[in-house]
Length: 293
Length: 345
Ligand SMILES: Nc1ncnc2c1ncn2[C@@H]1O[C@H](COP(=O)(O)OP(=O)(O)OP(=O)(O)O)[C@@H](O)[C@H]1O
Ligand SMILES: [Mg+2]
Image (cartoon, rainbow over all chains, first blue to last red; front, side, top):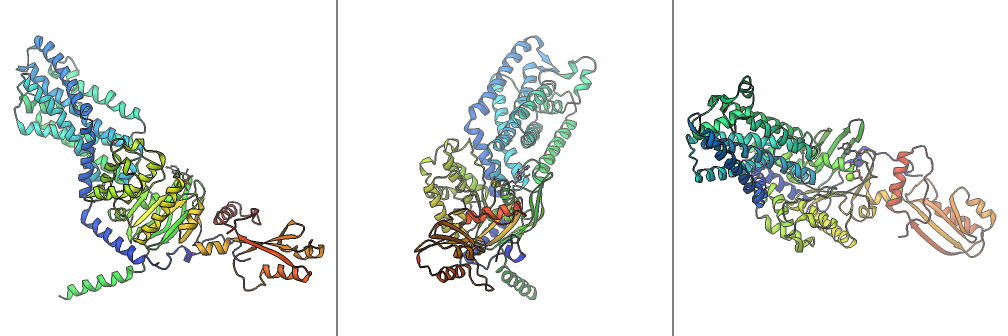
């Protein structure tokens, strides 16, 4: 009988049906949207993503700014005043002054990393990353939105610590340009690093592992609390392979004028790490690795 | 001057060509997950203004297909174009045109319901998103929850919020991946009405569903996907005609005699009662033959019986769908098993 067993798609049937009664309205709509996409190119969307991320951490500013600042100030009190009594001076400057840039760096490294890392990872867990993946934002715009907000958080936390340290009697600002450059570039590289980890992480362990077992040790060994010139034997040389050392010392030079390592080299290293992380993040988002599979 | 005219000429010509262009065009799409082929060599075109329903059992590849169009899946073979733009090369354009309500519910723990919508509109470049957000919240009955954290919405409310999100930028091609899963009957009816209204406003709709009633009520065309293959696409009415079986119950004035029963043996006839026969037949017309109903009724009359009542009906899309999928999975199974009773219209 007719139709029996004809379970097969003939070519014409998959073609669009003759335009229906609403076809003209539909075409108008499409044309308007195409025109909008050509006009916008995702720029406004990128600004909105940045604002959303900003809003996210400002809403919880007690956790995201005040609490890290307080923790760091505790370090400052404990180390600055207990050790400071005994050490008095390091490389010709008061130990308290020496300590401030290190603590600022430590706080902003961890905070920028956690901000973009957690934010992206949570959106994966909650499934809202899908809402971002279907928008016209380009990989670079997504990166700009996330890292932009993270940099703001890093600067905010670092700024609070610095301001309080000044109030408590530390005097630190040697070269504004170098200071700002190291602050921004370090924030950017760890914001990007956080984003990469957020994209790749499959569970919370991954995202906790990196700060606890990678960033924290490297930061502690990166000359936050001491000058590597004080280290014995091979350790001062070994320390030189730690990129965070260059970031800490770069900022220390900007703030106090002393550094264990050449500042130019530090600037080069932090710039390369920004570019490297940017490249990896861009590649992950552009190819859709782990996100669009 | 000449150049200007030429350019205008091209523009005009191009616009003319576009008149007949499909809004969505999928060519030989194949998506593999390792050894598993989720979508196999699929071609399909959707015209502007259409409502298309894709049916298919769990794991057929419906969500995967939608993912390839909306940008959630980037690695596949074949070409997918929206409004003539390639979804991977010109994604900024195609994603602006497309809106999608994903199958999986999600929630943003950091924002209120209203804020989520405003951000979502913003990603698509929408200014003054507040008004649009409030309008959608009202339409979908979420106004009361506007400032609630979306984490605490009920499942059905989350589903509505997902729909609102997809509509924030007023897409022209809307994908609804099982939009009525977990939604109450009242909202389901409202949603269908809303989909029809969207179509009047020029929105082209592609929906997947397990509720065949939904496809039957809404769709202009229906596709059936099974194990990643598009096994059938047709207009809804034609599908019902081509594959639907009809049945007719004839109740006579007395007990059916044996010779009559013998004569009816070649047909698909059952005898629900001593004075009653039920025949199944295909809906489609076949000019080559005398219609089955005519032959059966002629036999009844030839036996000298009088017909006391006639009752007819036809199978629903649901049965058609089940049968087509069953046949596709077991091509050698032979005759289609028709469920008893059918679906009275
Ligand atoms: N990310 C993935 N990795 C591996 N396999 C996948 C992935 N996503 C889907 N699949 C497989 O692809 C096939 C098609 O899945 P898909 O989600 O498209 O089905 P569906 O038609 O939407 O089903 P349902 O009606 O249950 O929603 C399934 O066999 C599924 O297991
Ligand atoms: Mg699905």
